Length: 229
Image (cartoon, rainbow, N blue to C red):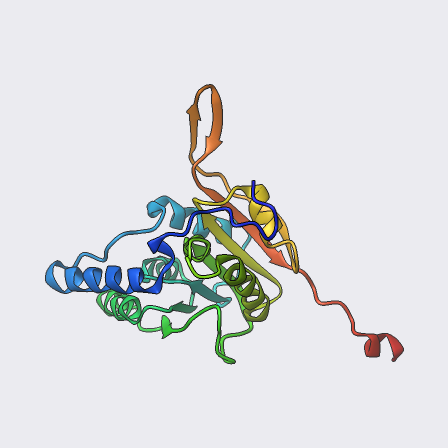
């Protein structure tokens, strides 16, 4: 388990923008050639898990949802098919957004908003979301060869800016355990639920290859001025 401030993972090309630009350029070309939308991170089961949680908790269909690192945008398409209407996807790779735009067009989901945006330096209009979803983006940031620790802190800060107080954050990770994620998001967020994920057994021990958690942004307390009124 990684302690705060430690570097828990070895740096990897998977943490670089160059890698993802090249990867999505290939996927974009493949989509244009044969119509294949590309890889679904953590498989279709991960999307079903997220949608099932939203439906179980009766999250209103007009809730504002942000997909952080949307990639091919398939998760947003599935959310739209489930009736969610206020959907936004961002990715720092222009090729990813080009691909997600083509997928959106193919599926006839013109209401999905897509933007080239770096979540570590969000624009002013990227704010006020009821739901933020991350499937693998925090994992990739954690592998960045250039100051991964600092970028993880930037990520948590950005999440606090774009997510409404008491809004929900659903994260799926293959790099982090539940305990490690609780530590990473300890400031400003509280755990609501751990979602069931596939288990494996090795050497007589049972574990999870994927961690899926739901956090809630803590309610902002009254300011000193409010208390004086």
